[in-house]
Length: 160
Image (cartoon, rainbow, N blue to C red; front, side, top):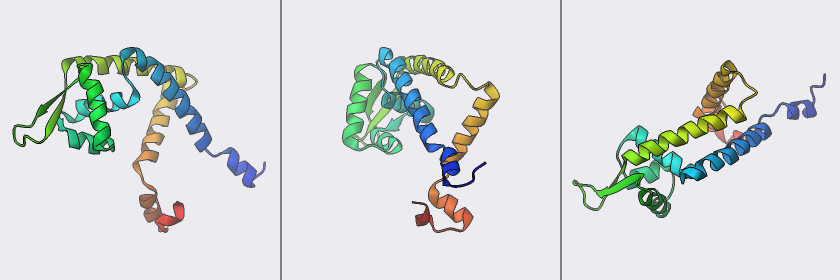
């Protein structure tokens, strides 16, 4: 058994995660398209469901997109009747974005379709393995390189 650089490269997860993400993304896009949704629409609808009514600017901040792009995204969703924008009664310059009943229904449909995609893409894993994968991915995404480095007593810039 080799312990040199080649053996270490064989155990790197980046390429496998990238491949898995591409498979998941392509299949997700194909089941969302008949629902008139793209992944970015789904993320916005999910945020609105989970956070409730929010300002247009707050949604842009949460989604980490600029204000020009949030307008286009919300135009798509509003045209489809999935969200509603209205002026804030407290500040008439602000728009409040709400998920409509049709938006809730479409989000439920999308989540059901995506559950099927997950079953397809992760079909080689049993439920316990999927739970472990989820927990590991959740943990891996919850820490930034700076917090990992601080915990290890290292220079955060050394990880970049």
